[in-house]
Length: 194
Image (tube, rainbow, N blue to C red):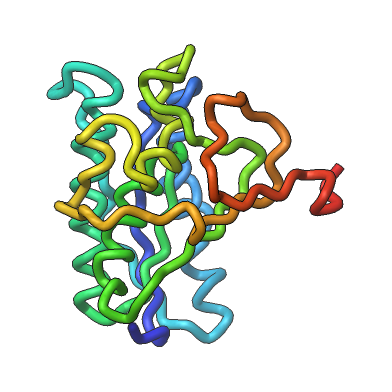
């Protein structure tokens, strides 16, 4: 993967979060000149199309996220096929499912791949363990292969992230049902954040 071109991909999704307004994050960053700021560091920066959720066609919020994740994975895979470095700018955390699925699929031939997840929450609920049923809190579980098939099998990627290849940094609020054996969790106090 070449690092000469930084390719920005907007991920306009808010269906997974409690405040759907976060879907405007990529548009706000674009309007306020993030591409120009990044280009000022000497990088060549391009923008692709913004990937959007299609809740009108969905039967549920989770269904909307599943379709969105597939489209985002396709967009990120296209960037990687160009040998550009993708930078996904998006709304709620559910955009990680499509992003990671495409990157992991692309890099899999190079060997084991690890993920560092920096967040105050574990985001490892499944539809069975979540009281809120918000997909925003489910992407880590999906990447580990737990949850709805539409989230765990994005982009036809069947090689799930292994728990020992995941570390979560900065966690301060999560339920016991989210704990996954083998995942390294470093709380906010450990990291000096509180």
